[in-house]
Image 1 (cartoon, rainbow over the protein chains, first blue to last red):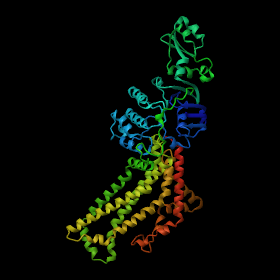
Image 2: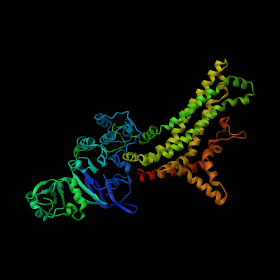
Image 3: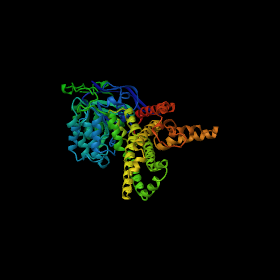
Image 4: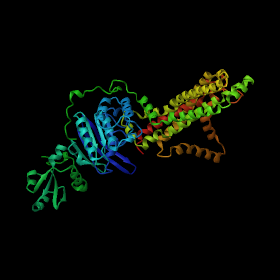
Length: 297
Length: 310
């Protein structure tokens, strides 16, 4: 079942086009990373999916139109739309009472047990908690909701590395199972590389790359080329080249691994490197894998 | 995505969301949302309580010399005895005015604060509709504040009776004159009636304030009040009339001639026969006002759909 399905999803704010009619299909049980520069349209896409903004085009989330039925949708969808949107005046115990009182799929015991692993006190107000604790609190609430789709928009922005690591660890170990779907945007791409099952790059309102992580591993290879093979390697049309410690690192899309091993050390590129390659050179921007013949081994 | 969907395991065949909470109890979004307003806006009960404290202390101070005054009063014509009621009436009127002011400022912030502190993104992540949210907010001035003021006025008046009685007893007088002269139960009935009348009459004002608080990006008070002043000035300059001012005045004070019969003795209520609920309920101004209030609230709920953080 498609969890999110969009066709020609378009959003215009005045003179700016935030989304240029994107097509999107996210199936159940995936963890999709939505990566893009600032102002690329990530948050706009998520806002449309969450029923927070009206849009043009077709969009169904779990079989519903998000704009016209946000409150029903929110029984099955959870989101952390930004860091620190929890009201600062509320007490932790009040927050638990409120969510338990209004949410049919909230399991309070679960939330309490997640909170039990933190140092957050029930009597504290949100304003008294550190930024990391607020993120822990919000995550505890969200993980105690038996939702089908979880949307995270920059959930770890401004948190230190310990909290960030712990955030994704909890998400994977205590929450994610194959019946749930997670969509996440972040600028800290390196941290979610091993979390994702799917990857999508978005730039200026368009999807510029869309692939599963299996395809990613199969298609993209990075070689630290020995100087004597540089010309030879360049002839294979790498999508990107960058200097590292005086040597050149070339990123290839769909090249033959054995051939590349002749030039130097071959390794898996990071999402961040692919992102930079894709964004800095629009000419070599990778098309949708379906339209790319022979690239995948 | 190109990847195939994973087969859904059997154990995930959970029951559909049917408005039951995880423990099997029905969810009560409106109830919890009203409670949430009370958690957030403690001025709803703290402001009236402070006024109540001031009243109780002020009355205690004024009770110096009360025994002599009461002795003198009781010698007068019984018609003048009702003068001792005056501080009790004043406490009730002061409380009604207090909760009106609290209600006005509460409404101006109700749909603005959640956008200002970005918490609207959290509230919108929960299965609570915009209409439920707006209703939970208007329930505060229409239901909660009248109940609070009613309860506090009764408490304040009972304490005032106690204070009076202590003074009278210590001066060797019977305290009973207070409650034989003042018909407390009748007064409380009038107060209750007055609070209901006032809440319904002011409903469009609260609706307007909520709409402005959901619409304006800043300075909600100015946006709420300025248009009224501008229209009044415009009308005065252009036509030399002040129908709009009169209209606004009726929206604030116009409940009285509909809901009460004052006779010729000025604005005092001596008996329950002066309450005219029939005339009040058959007043088109009341129903038009309620209709406008409903329209404002509906507009505020629609508007909230489009609203995000400021």
